[in-house]
Length: 140
Image 1 (cartoon, rainbow, N blue to C red):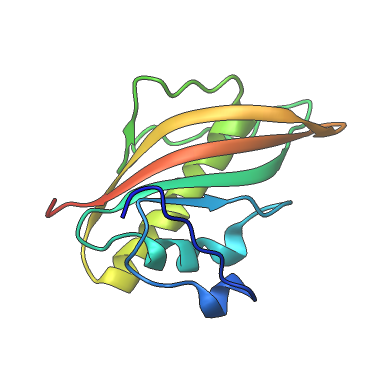
Image 2 (image 1 turned 90 degrees about the vertical axis):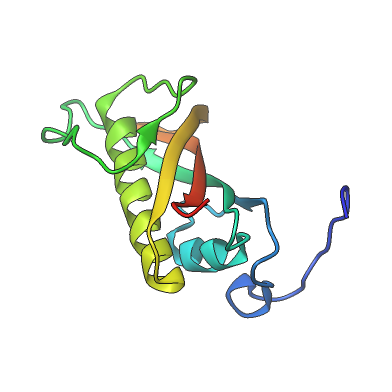
């Protein structure tokens, strides 16, 4: 049913329904890591969906060590990353989500980094980012 929204009171790790979502907003700060598995289980298992993942990313004067450009996901055409700290966070997040999806669904998934936005500077050297990560089973 389109346009329908439900609110489930309580800890989302306990009350979140499974296999129902096209989109999941992970708006927890400073990071949503604690709910990645819950969000993955909420996605429709046959079609997947989009995870909107919020996180506070610390940036320093010097960039992180080299980031591997050999990754198992796709970079979408509207994905733009302004600095290496943001890219490192996106790649680390995508890898963690990919591992969770493979484990909980016991099959391979394909991820696309669709969009990244810096919402605001949260504190000195800390940026609030939102990554839109499209997840779909490879059988799709």
